[in-house]
Length: 195
Image 1 (tube, rainbow, N blue to C red):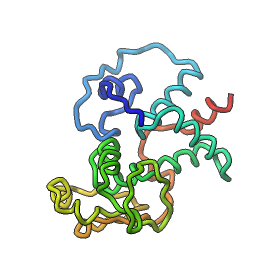
Image 2: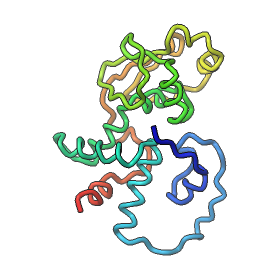
Image 3: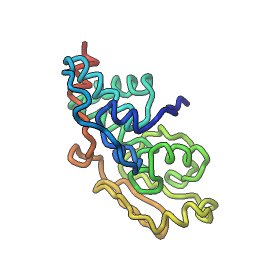
Image 4: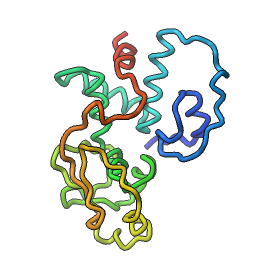
């Protein structure tokens, strides 16, 4: 599994996104007038792709494979790509509020703290479907991390429901474009890959 261990705030400044989008609650000392150079069309398209990869924490190979799958699905390829990224297990665990960042969600999944429909799930890239139930394993509920999680504010999305007492969540429907509050222009990504 490839990991990026670089400076998160520096990467956020380069991609022109706020650190809170990635789950980091630090203040960026970004100077908005620092970069006045105009980007070309290719530069804007590349930046949008890099933004999506950085926010969801996927490598180039995985992102490319997801794009190929998204183009084969019916409908708009850009929206299908975002839907596939949102329905990954690591993103769903993050969206349900069990982890503060997607990287933390991936680590918790790999360490075996979650069940998917009653079976142990250790692969963060698993694609979930409507009706799937994600829950914290019985042995992991005694962990101090999950005891503190019960008191956290749940950043629920309308397409998932979470029961904080049982430490489980259910996917109610597929995410809609309005539910994704990230500054990603998926049409730019489609234009980049269609060259």
